[in-house]
Image (tube, rainbow, N blue to C red; front, side):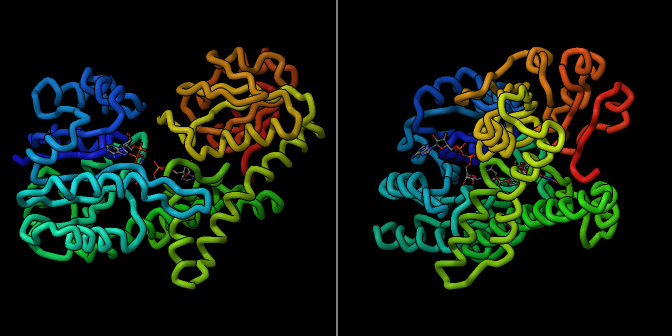
Length: 426
Ligand SMILES: NC(=O)C1=CN([C@@H]2O[C@H](COP(=O)(O)OP(=O)(O)OC[C@H]3O[C@@H](n4cnc5c(N)ncnc54)[C@H](O)[C@@H]3O)[C@@H](O)[C@H]2O)C=CC1
Ligand SMILES: O=C(O)[C@H]1O[C@H](OP(=O)(O)OP(=O)(O)OC[C@H]2O[C@@H](n3ccc(=O)[nH]c3=O)[C@H](O)[C@@H]2O)[C@H](O)[C@@H](O)[C@@H]1O
């Protein structure tokens, strides 16, 4: 079993640390935020990720997983060093590598024996090659390090399962030397290896997120046409998805894609193209479609209420998708903000988060949020909403109308209760 250091205790760092510890490795997870480290040390996970807390507690107890702010000690005792810090976008949309660079600057002087530096963070094509050059320039002995680009493909909400059962393990490397280490590390996972260059691995990660975003934008563009042609978009998605060359996943029309990665990675990839003087037409179109969706739904609300000013509208869902507490780049919150701009009296309920937004009343009880409401908008497809008591919804609202921006409800169920249903091209 191997000694592993994971730098960054976010979704990726925590899942990586916990899963590796669960399969017998000795993992030290480092974060710079002391409170977070203390909390994690007590077995409390600051993010909502199903199954993570239980697995983490088990591994702390068995002694396979520890948390610290002391990078030096963690690096010294480990052969494999994962970098899993955030790589957000800056104001211009390109990747802000500040955290990544801080970490590598801190790690370089600590290397005095062979280590494999494994980049899990999503970084622009060419970053790991530059990192290799940086190690060489700073005089780290060639026999003391290898750089591996090992991007992560997990989804929030199903992180553990995705890490245990990936469809592939991508390993970008300049040398053969680190490959046996990586294979030993992941020996509990059955998945094909894609061994490629450092930049190849980086590009696979961006291409993957970009393609997922394209699928979502493609179906959302079709949904606009379907809506005006009285075509049910779920039939179209099902029909085209049966062709194995297309496939069903990521053809759910709705409010569009959000989250901490798809929007930022598309924007980053667009910048990477532009710096090479290539216009990324498809990427730009996918983003344009995604950015156009909120106004489509505002129009739909106006069909129901004519004017949104001073109308009491309730939005159910704030997170960017169900089963997470992440609201980064949430389309639901963009919709809420737009409703405030339109002068509506906005009420918000989410099972996991209670964000504070100027001009919005946030509720902690589902049915309180729709009291005297004139329109209920489903912005995130939490199962709690799908299973709502529609008779109670009908009694509590002033105007019985639901706009299902995720096509997650059964129209006939609502109609049976005398509630007007509008969905996404249905
Ligand atoms: N969130 C996700 O589902 C996925 C994220 N990724 C990529 O993985 C990377 C990490 O993403 P998240 O886990 O969401 O990030 P996050 O932002 O949730 O967490 C990053 C952590 O790194 C810590 N950190 C920053 N600088 C540090 C330093 N110098 N020393 C120690 N700790 C430091 C922060 O305190 C924070 O706890 C990103 O590049 C992201 O694009 C890839 C696949 C899935
Ligand atoms: O790089 C990352 O961080 C990760 O980004 C996404 O994972 P995640 O952000 O957790 O969320 P997804 O499940 O991909 O959903 C993204 C967004 O697309 C939307 N979506 C998804 C599917 C669909 O059919 N329609 C649709 O609108 C979701 O509502 C959500 O807002 C990718 O799916 C992961 O493979 C990747 O590792």
